[in-house]
Amino acid sequence: MEIIIDKKLRTPLYWQIADQLKEMIVSGNMADGTILPSERSLAQLLGVHRNTVIKAYSHLKDQELIDSFQGVGYRVTFRSDDSPSEPDVRRRVNWSNIIKDEYQDIERTFDDIFLRFTEENNISFSTGMPPAVYDEEELAADLASILKEEGRRPFYLSPYQGDLTLRQRIISYLRTKGIKAGMNQVQILSETNQALDFIITALLKAGDKVIIEEPVSPDVYRVIELAGCIPITVPVDENGMICENLDVLIEKHRPKFIYVNSSYHDPTGCILSVERRRKLLELSNRYRLPIVEEDAASELSFEEKFLPTIKSMDRSENVIYIYSFSLTFIPGLSMAFVVAPEKLIRSLSYLVSIRIMSLDWMTQKLLAKCITDGKYYENVQRIAGLNKEKRDLMCEYLDRLAPLGVTYRKPKGGVYIWCRLPGNVDAKTVVAECGRRGISVIPGEVFFPHRNGGHNNIRLNYSYETPARIRLGMENLTEIIEGLAEERG
Image 1 (cartoon, helix red, strand yellow):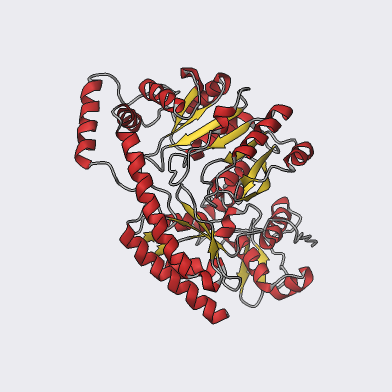
Image 2 (spheres, rainbow, N blue to C red):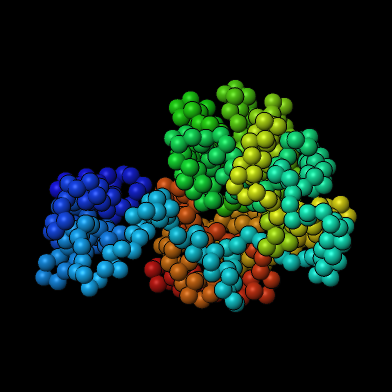
């Protein structure tokens, strides 16, 4: 039995061990009844910790490939038949063996923290949602009006490209951002994740490479990896994606597109400078390389003029623009759109027709109505004002931690604060203690695809909670960091 592990790979060691043993068992190279080395013996043989082998064996047991027996140890049981008294157990579908590994062996930290948001009384510093500023009675009247206006038409259906009225309103909205688009250049979708997923499906094949920022939202690199593609990461500083040596990466990797979160970046809150926007366009034109610009937080500016979108500066139709209303509309109602060349929009509409059949009709109509009567624009300003107040409140607490070595860059808009903890305080420990107190915080390392950074960072989000709950949560967070810093100082 030969197992080769590579400690330089991003794949965890226990997965490498389990995958190689699984291949031997399923291929028949390791017969049923074979006794596997003890946990300690295999750990010594491979030069890993015993716990690594335990996790590998547990993974194989979950897939019913091996079992453990007192006095014997671990034994291969893949094709073994149980006694007639237990016929039903071995006839169950082995789901662990059927589901693709990439949909089982995924990092759960990011998702698990978001699940806590749904638990009553939890304080969420993790979820990017707008505060509830829309008047409930006005919304009820708007919904009633929409249903009445539609009459007997099949209102539950909308065109694959999206509701006609909403697309018209979006085209007008885009002009305020300096973007000119026709009706056949706009695709309505449910959210940013879906937009990126559909773009990747339409443009990439397995093995293709994409240049992305680092740190970056897990939603970005996970959809790339699940498509069998490879993210090539570029560091971010206070002016966004560092572009100085980007041409070298392009020459080396021949990516299919560059993804950039241009305004109030997730997670750092930074904004891509005009100079770097121009540089990206210059590289796009030189290499005929598409740019995917995600711009969801651009309306939430606190202290500065709006910068021109990369799309508005594009004269070659090389930029695919994604905008989401998830931070600026009604909590829980998600809607986004893509602006791109007509040929790509046709491909995205086709994907809508075969994957989801119909977009959320009511949300489209409600959003179009709010844009038409000006409520949307008024409430975006209200949301930005509330976010600014809550940002200032959160920063007051972070400033108290400066003597301990806590640092951050105060965002000029958006919803995120990227916070660096003292060198002796691990982010995961802070996140775990926050969880025990009913506060959800995101550890920094999940924003690094290769887990090569962010170990002393946390991402805080101030958009959803009330000032009173932010104050309560930050008092607890401050106490946790102070306690850990003193304990390990």
